[in-house]
Amino acid sequence: MKDFLEVSPLKILEMSAYKELGKGNLGVLMARAGVGKTSCLIHIAFDRLFREEKLVHVSLKDVPEKVSSYYSVIFSDLVKALDIENEHEVRALLDKNRIILAYLRESFDLDRLRKNLSNLVKGVNFRPETLIVDGIDFAETGRDLFEGFRKIAEEFQAEVWFSALSHRHIAEVNERGIPFPCNKVDDLFSLIIQLYSTQSGVFLKLLKDHDTEGSPDVMLRLDPNNFLAIE
Image 1: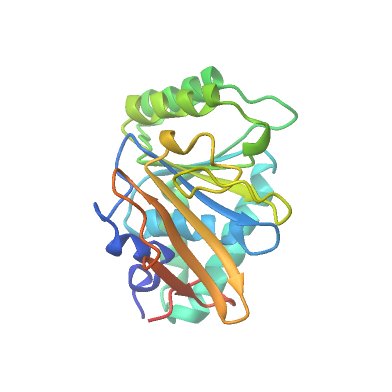
Image 2: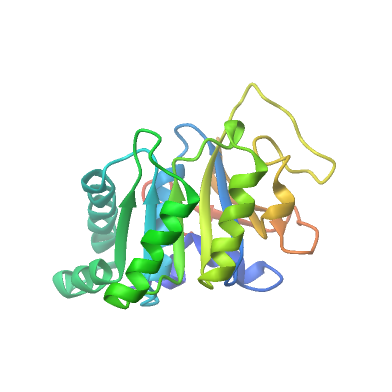
């Protein structure tokens, strides 16, 4: 069996300053619609799960059953791509270390999330090391929410990954080279990674790397069929 960690999209962090996002920090994966943002975000989740870390997936747009089905479909693809023989054992281990929290119809707020996370820690001894947050509209969300998430990241000593939708018709870029919709909140994020597609393939690019300047050379090519890193 191929080791997932050898072909994980987060191999791009091997070329980064600190090799990781780090506990208490925020990271974001940004991409245009249809490029594969959700699939790549779930691959980031699998990277953490294959390290046997505890993970909470926070969805603001899908019910838990739909989120779970995303994981199942992508895991089935990984079984084929990595020739995983003990499929059921591995799936059981991954499911054991993942909890899905869904907040639909404007039911989300930070206090409720904090309470739910505290209940997981105190009630079932499930202390998340990573939060995956999907469904936040960066274009419509102010700084306060992300500042609140950073406090939660610090409080629970977890790293928090977001997805952000960029738009072809909005070309805003700030003085640090960060494009819309992260251009006005980039100081709150330790890592900003862009997923994009060209005629020559699908790539990840590291736009912000903690307190160092992003390098245009820090890129990783992905297989467009399964979003695994290509050597």
